[in-house]
Amino acid sequence: MRGKLFFGSLLLLASVPSLVLADRPVTITFLHNNDLHAHIEPVTIARKKYGGYARIATLIKQYRTSDPNPVFLNAGDVFQGTLYFNVYEGLADLSILNYMGVQAMAVGNHEFDRGPLPLATFGKNATFPLISSNINLDAEPSLKDLVKKSTVIDVAGEKLGIVGATTDSLLTIAVTGPTVTMNPLLNSIQKEVDALTSKGINKIVLLSHCGMEEDLALAKQLRNVDLIIGGHSHTPLGTPDLPGWPKARGPFPTIAKDATGRDVPVFQTWEWGKVLGRFKVDFDEKGQIVRLYDNAPIVVDESIAEDPTVRSMVEALRRPIAELQDKAVGETKSEILRSGKDSTAAQLIADAMLLATEKQGVVAAFTNGGGVRSGIDAGVITYGEVISVTPFSNTLVILDITGEQLLAALKHGVTEGGTLLPSVGTSYRRGSGGVSEVVITGKPIDPKATYKICFNSFTAGGGDGHEVLKGVAKRTDTGIVDIEAMIEFIKSKSPLDLKPENRVKG
Image (cartoon, rainbow, N blue to C red; front, top):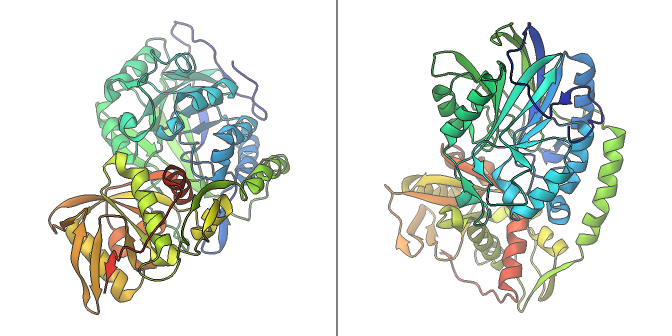
């Protein structure tokens, strides 16, 4: 065991004996979340606050007291998303996750956003194991002994195997460096499951950071995986219909059939700690699920009291964040203008979004005019000024969108509100009846083609009435916050000297 859980009684095993275990029925309560993305503090949706580590800690304590044999798991992407990550590179989150007693964490793609070393520091100080069965770290000395393929938890005398998995697109969407490679996803998972079952472990969870669609596809091909707890796609399952919330994309859990025809429940808890996953499972003596109940994502809202210890931790961690407001990130030779269709602030935001996502195949980016809240005077640019330009902490979402859908979204923007302002190389003409002369990366738009376009999470989720964007099925929430993208753009391009480019004509 690598460390002591601060408030939990379950022990992580350092090793598993190679013998057939004398199994008996057991009930296990699973508590889980995913894609926290450094959202240590609550976020505001439709004027109400959701999430926050202090409230999550209260729930974990509550269910550890009230529920049988609780196990708390995290499905990855703790890194990246707020200024807490900029300052602490995951260690602020870690201090609280250690306190809450997380018992295993899948390695997400954003855990590599600053390369292997910050993840290694995180892993060395974690009181829980980092797991991924398909990342090959044999050539990366800082991580090869820290990231395990699986872990085993002792639950009331029974052995629960947890196998990790990470999206197989890791190398193309993260800054892993040359020492990190990937093994085949399906084979890696099944090999580790087989290794655990050969030791007599018959209750196995796949803790996956692969995305909902991939998890459902994996479930159909795997054997001896009892359930999947996932992340990466930020999929809301079973979430209530609350103001500003997306519609649930399926029940909690969504059921798939495995390679033998057995039901495999698949769980995910949206993002940012706005909900906490909770469900109970009765296993029989053969390790088979005979009952799954009390299954619902718990809304983490203001009705939940904040854990006083975590609240104090957050208050202390926030102090350097406040100091960061006045820190210089670059400079601009000319004033960055907020207003109008030729807003250079909008150009800055859209170009930063494009630069941050080009590696993932994005060809253009659009920001919404209403999201541009301020300009910047000529001279030094501070963190505080960047935040004042776009203060909403939207994440960057990549949509695989057809030209026809994009044309409809642009038309909606100019006729009904929510004008979409493009990145460099992309332009269009607007008129009373809609849009024309639409150019994507210097070429006329093809209505039948599919493009990878980056939007902020507000418009991608239907904000400003963009139902067409909301309805695009294939999407990836990168977890990158627009502020972070702007900061990196300014640093790389400073000093700026932005001129209006007439990207929206008419």
